[in-house]
Image (cartoon, rainbow, N blue to C red; front, side, top):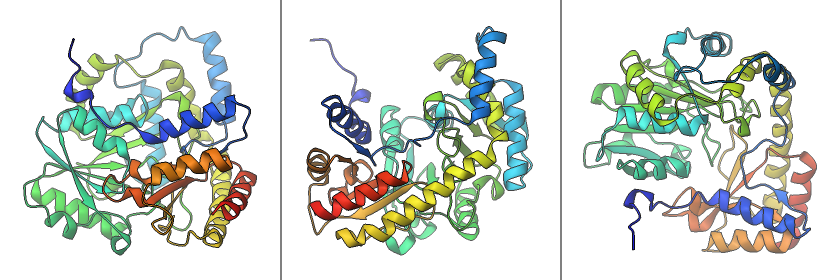
Length: 380
């Protein structure tokens, strides 16, 4: 029998399996409330749709250069000035095929096979799975409420062997917790003094409920910043993201991009320029997420789920269900089959402790959140 590579033997991205199971239920005529996937229920901004329609008639939609079209890179640079009051050069911006493309490029450019990269758990499962597929060793730090589910220099110091990289996310998936300015400075200083490459996942910036998110770039220009059009700008299927990288990584990333995917999606790049003229539309979506968040934070405890991570940003609530089950995957499967609520088991985000947790996504319709809370109360 022909062999299958070891690098392909990674865990599934379980939320996508839940999404598939939900689609199968809908194909049978069942109503499903989608609280499983981090996909806004709203379409791309209207100006983006108009720009895409115009591009179909006016542009041949051929390859672009590997780093992305210059007008988009320049517009993102202006976004950093407008949004964060940070000067960023378009020269340091790379357009990617979604944030996932950015992580792959960053990991390949910054780390060798066998390097050790730290991330907090619970955390986005694709960090771990991409690192493993690339032959890089993921090092899990177990975080909890005492650090708001975020890595700290003190936690990292408990790791015995040397490390080469650190991944942080603020707001984080699945917990929604954030890193404040002082905490970000402490992490950046820790990495700087020890020669550790910092990668900051900032794809939920813009979706916050009390305080704006801090970009690691404001603390250390050697950090690698990953962002995306998917969440704040409601453009998941457009597969468009960007990186901010230091000068010494520009050519390595360019060569990798040329060979891995030639160039980012041309239509998405052209249309994406208009996205940054749509802050008002995006902020209206965030206002709806805030209402959805309020509904679930009020109603989940009434359903018996009262141990919740602080949902400071993003659009997720991470719940402790240890009093109900020690098999979160089976629990979420039953929840879908018996109530029509699709949610994600915590095992996706925390292989060590996730059997007793689950994640709800609240980027859908407010009426769906209200109905989901009602069904949960009756079911639990």
